[in-house]
Structures are given as C-alpha cells and as structure tokens.
Image 1 (cartoon, rainbow, N blue to C red):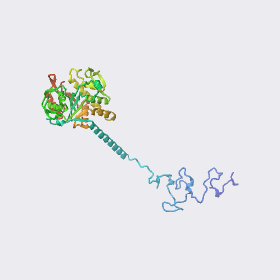
Image 2: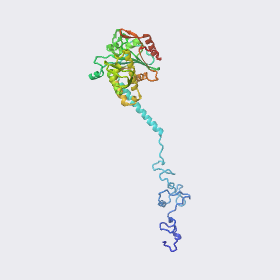
Image 3: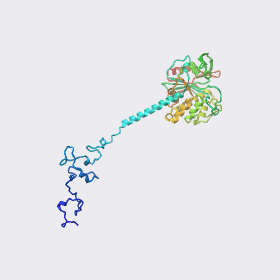
Length: 430
C-alpha cells in the first residue's frame, strides 16, 4: 500500500530513490543538491562504462583542461570514454608509455639471428680446420725432390695405399689378412688431377716397368745413383714417398703437387667409422690371400671386407689391372659417401670418420685440410652421374720381363692434356 492517502506520490518526492513506488516504472534517482547529474546519453555525454558505480558522480568538480573551475566548466579525465588504462586522450599506463605495445622489429630479429648463426658456423669451421690440421701427419717434404718438372694447370695428387701395419695388433693383422711382413710397400698408386674439365683418376699398376732415376736420399740427404729399370713399387720400398714422387715425375713428366698415403689400419677404420660402404658388385669372387669372399649384387662392406676387396688380385685373370679398376671404384664410392651432405652435416659421423683417417694419413708438408677436402671431392666426382669425371689405367702396350710396359706415346699425350688442363681424350685399351 502507498503511504499517501490518495495513492499518488507527492510532487516534491517524485524522484526519490529507494523508497518504493506504486508506478510500474522504476524510480528515478533522488535529486541531491551536492551532486550534479550526468546528462543522459544522447545529450552530449557518453553513458557510464559498464560496471562503474554511480558514486563516481560524487567526485567534486576539478579544474578543467581549459583552466576553469567548477560551475560551467566540464572536467574530462578520460573516464567518460571508457578507456581507463590508456588509449584515450591523455591516456597512458603510468610509466611514460602511450598505452600500446610496440610492434616487434622482425627485420632486426632476423638480422641478429643470422649474424649469430654465421658466427657459430665460422667458429665451428675454424675450430674443425685447426683440429684436422693438427692431426695430419705432414711427414713428406717434396722440396727435397730433385729435378722436378714444371708445374702445369690444375692440381695433381699422388694417392698411395700402403701395406703398412703400423699400430696394428696381432689379432688385427689376422682379421685383416695382412700378414706380418716388416716395413711397408705400396699396394696401390693413383694420380688424381683436378681442374676446370672435371677430375681424372689414373691408376699406376705397381708392376709397371719404369726407371728409377738419380735421387737425393730422404734420410742422408746425399745423392744416390740411378737404379735403372725396375718395378714402380720398388721405388717406395727403397727410399719411401720422396723417391716414389721423384720416380713418377721422371717417368711421366707430370708435376706432383700433393702426396697422400694411408695404411691398412687407417683405411679399414675410415670405412667402419662411416658405417660401411655400399657397393654393387657385378660378379662375386674369392681370394684366400686377401680374405675376399663376395657374392654379386648390392652389399655394404665393412672395414675388413673393404680392405679385402681392394687388395684382391689373384681372383682376376688380368691380375693388377683388374685390381686397380676395383680400387678406383671403391675409392670413389668411399669419397662419395664421406663427402655426402648426410656425413658432412652430421657431426656424429663426420668427426669419427675424420679422426679415424687423419691419425694414419701421411701427407706432404704443404697439404692442409682444404687441399685434402679438394682431393676427396675430386675423388667423389670421378664417377658422379652426369659429371665430367674420368677414371682409367695408365695406358700399357705389353710387358717386359713380366712387368707392364707403358704405352709412351699415349702417356705423353695424356700428360700434355693434364698439364694444360685440357679434356682427357686418351683411353687405355685394358
């Protein structure tokens, strides 16, 4: 019931607040003299933000931005826009910011990331270079070789596989079928030429009939007389790498720029370090002397099997010439696998492979990791599909006293093409 007898509110209390009303419409706020009511929305002022208490209206008038006070001056502090924490006029976060988070500078971030990556790659590369250089056995001084031919275009490497058993245990010698002979001899010899017309790999049969010329002793430093006709591998047995280089240069007229030699143990260790070498054999063969026992088809050779494969000679009718072809094929396949992105970009394969080979690799004093890498990439490209690489035996024309005689006219043409870094057109009949 309404407390007024006539059921109508009195005029002076019509806008009172919180006392109830008989009207179906809610009561309006009671007019209070100390509070100015906000104008209704649509009459020049925005409505209160959601959740803002009407008590906000009880704040006394403050100085306006125009310097006025109270009365007709209207105070605008940004609250009426609903943007309490910035974004409106004069907004901010209280810390000197304008209320907006700055956009990320992606250009700068990318630049910093790339710079960091380049620095890391350079640091690792430089560290690897000096580590590899420190492990290489630079024992061959080519400056002591006398009467050397003039240098030509391109680079010539003399690559030697020796039967050195250095560092091998008795069990390893037995497992690898190497025997226990003292000293060391050349089991394989190849010239790798790299230049602008693709690499050329030339095998030098160890039974080649050549002339051992006058030379300076690697230990004594004294001049030694010529030894005349002999087998090529005899030069290494007599006075090691320096006399071998001297003999190859004398009989070919080709300047040798670098020398690289690896023994039995190092060869097998490299193969095992990269998890074996995948080979496809056209035919199977056995050789009790080398321990070879292979079937035709695709297979993965471990270190022991790989050594038996490259050393086998008794299983072939062509003896040394057939063996050199197998050596070329295997060495190129090995280099292709070592120089593949899967190995080069995988430190868990690259460093074991490098460590396994570098400890037993003997090179000339001027050979560094860069030259060694060029040699491996040259070997890799010899048999690459669609490449300009070429592999061959030194041309022979027959035999002399059981040794292979070189076809000297072809040898001369071949050497001229290599010196001038021209495409190799010479072919070997065998």
